Length: 366
Image (tube, rainbow, N blue to C red; front, top):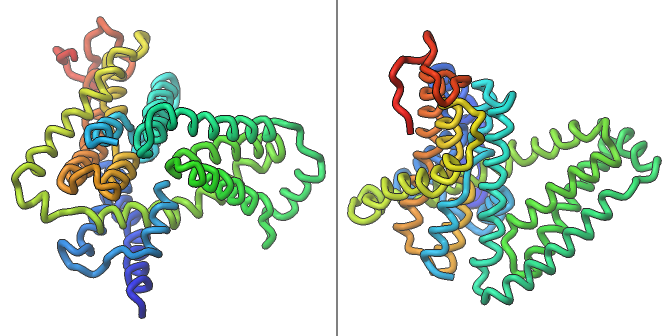
């Protein structure tokens, strides 16, 4: 069997095992699924068992799943959040409903979209003026696509979508992937990162489905997400584990020292503005939870550090420390957020005491 074949089998075996581990552990301790994808990836990687090494095929699949100066790379990585990674934890804890859930989603969306734009402007190896012009061209292309998506769709289109949705035709699913290919192609042609194309494709897809197939839209998105979360996304995170430079981290020195520094910086760079901008109507526990959830980071950190290392603009040790800190953020911050919200009571106002039995009196303020 070829190297790609054996490595892909191991990667998909981990992808199947990860939800089982997350379910087993999650009954006692809510841990994001991505942790159970990255850690086994490290285990089978060259620094431990050396059973899998990425090649062109696996790297290509990983980029589909993921989608300047050294300081710029680190700065952009620190500003990204991990909304998609912690959503299952929020959902399982019942925190996506109501005011708190809507605020978390809003801050998380900004925390993901902002760094993607920064990547397009700062990490393309172009000057500021050229990067702005290229981004403007892409924005105009995207705006034209959005205007097209908002146009009324002919009645026959909805009928075709409905008739092929449960058969082998799958017109809507194929159309969604065509839109994705077009936006990825446009971003690549302009020298922009594929994450920007993927973001635009997601926006256009939802607009098209809302107009063309409002009744079938959620089902279509479920099918597309099934391909993503069932195959491409786990490949991305397992390969992240395989490529993780564990030897550099365990060797101590600067890489190990940088890990807690970056973890603290996630709280300062992301959590600081969130703490300042958090709506005043949120209770003390909700604001604390919002800061911690918003300070998580991982998917964009992985993507940005990969670009930085590949371009020779970031040292491998710095990338390892950033990814390691990001992994700890999605493991520790949500757990701490849930504990703090339980202690103070999610509905407690700024001047209210903690309410028993969920919380304790005398809880400290930020």
